[in-house]
Length: 193
Image (cartoon, rainbow, N blue to C red; front, side):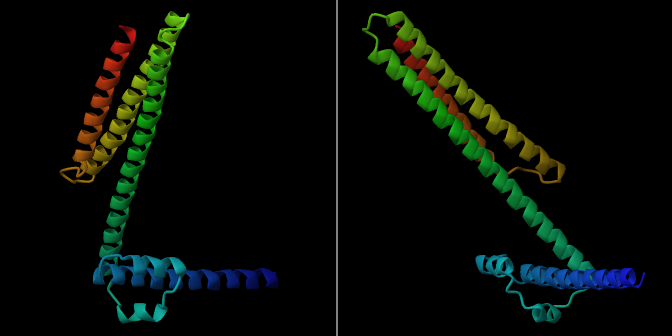
């Protein structure tokens, strides 16, 4: 029974120490955010754990100020997460466009290179099928990017923001997709006729 009490007492002390350290760390981060924007040096200090806890005592704040600082930090994290999500959607779009371009290009090459062979119909059919598959990759890439874009726009509207700042990305992606689609439809027409 005595061992159990000592164990529980040590656990309480550890929890208290952890909460004190976390609170000091949080106060330091919030103070740094108010002083200046988060810089690379600040993030390096935070990631390496080179924080001097004595600095947080100099910038003592009330609980309301700390709550406001936490809200600012949460908003900044949310904005950065939205940016990362949009960049991931752009990478996914680029990968699907690259894949579709490769498949459609292989279909065009196969169709034109083997046009004069004995199995011309099979070659044209196979080349045309690959071009159509490449076109479907372009369409799938656009719909995938549009779905992520709509989700981000919808979530920003729910949070009370009026405009979503990345409308140019959707316009660029749409123009690129339509242009590539038209080019390969013309290529398909030239291959067939």
